[in-house]
Length: 217
Picture (cartoon, rainbow, N blue to C red):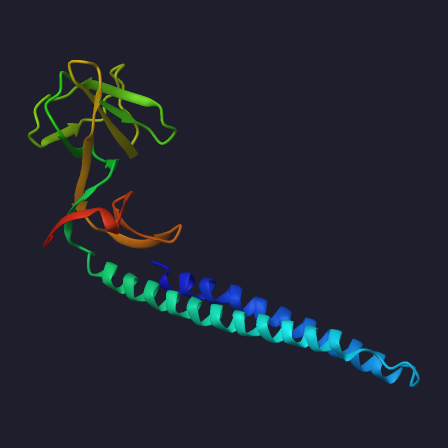
C-alpha cells in the first residue's frame, strides 16, 4: 500500500507552481529594476503597468497558496482514508464487483436479479474481455452463487488469474433486467488506484466504496 506516495504526489504539483511563480517574479523584478535604471528622466516610465503586474503576481501567489493548503487537506484525507482501509486487511468481505481470481480450479461470484427473468446467461471473461465460458443462469430473484471450475466452453483448463463475470438477464419482451454482481473473499491488500481506495482479494480488486458486508476472517 502506497499511501505516502499518493500524499506526496498530491502536494508536489502545488510546490512546483509555487517555485515557478517565484522564478517568474524574480525575473520580473530584474527587468523592472533594469528599466528604472535606464529610463529617460524626461520621460519617466508609467508605473501603472508595473503596479498592475505586481497585483497579478500577488493574486496568483495567493491562489497557489490556497491550492497548496487544499492539496494538503486532500492528502491528509487520503491518508486518513488509507488508514481506515487498512482495517479491512484479513477481513472477509462481500462487495459489488465483477473481478474474481481463478486459483486451484475455482473462482467464486454471486449475482442478484432485480426481478425474475425469462432468460439469464452467465459470461466469464478474461483480462482481454474475451468470453471464455458461458452458461445458463438462474431466473429467480434469489441471490445466486456461481462457482466456475476454470474450464472454458471448449473444455480446456483456463490459466489461473483474474477473470470478470457478466450476467445478462432479459424479461419476456427481451428487455434487459438490472443485475448486481457480487464478489467475496479475504482482503489481502490495500492500494490507491486512480484516486480510489481499492481492496485486493488475491489478485482481484474492488472499490472500498462497494463493500456490502464485512466479517472477521
